[in-house]
Image 1 (cartoon, rainbow, N blue to C red):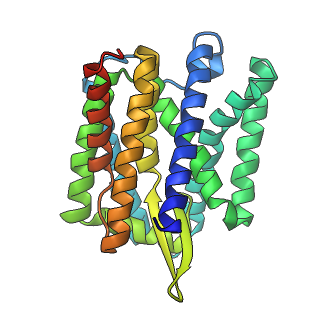
Image 2: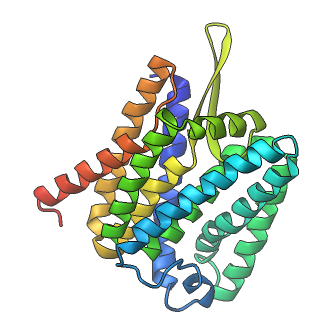
Image 3: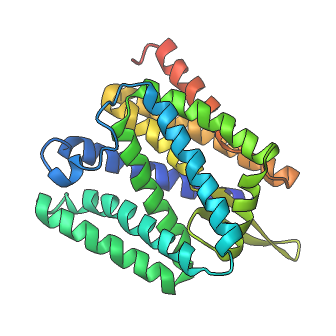
Length: 277
């Protein structure tokens, strides 16, 4: 297996482990810490309408991103501000969960926010922090949605997201346009693996959305059926590895969410059939 693929798989695994750990802490502190409880993006956790709502949110967000790229593509300050906001807010949740090992709610909350701001600031001057920042930020984002939605709305949301991913890559192709811009500007909206292969530098990128989606389902089932979490993780890992090997071999752009979601659901059903939950 290519070292480039192995690196991306390793980064994916790290993001999932961090997400699951962070999710376990957030779920435990959810009703006791006002800062944590304010992270919930909806109070109707079981409503299937949320799947449609968040899908619309994703579409509007993508349309806005494409507009900004075409309108302000040469003015990187717009995208650096977006990157700073995402990294600082999302990673603070992860830092909070780590600090909770040693400190109380208030100290962990303050420390998490400060560390999140520090990481976002450091990324602005140290591009090499891109992968680390992306992994921590995506872990935090995944946890936010995971604690906010029950498993069924999450599954419907991910199925809709998979359809959208296919359309945006093969039909409208705006996802390819976004990816090319993000890769060119080295923004922390992808994780990247590079290596010299046969005298030429090659790279492979994986969008942060492909890291977030499994974390959402992992954290969501963790709250409802803890034993199912490992099956979701295993399904995501197997399907992602096969996907990356295919992309590397074919040297083409493919949507990652359809195989990822398919793999997670197959393994989720497998765990049920085997009687683990």
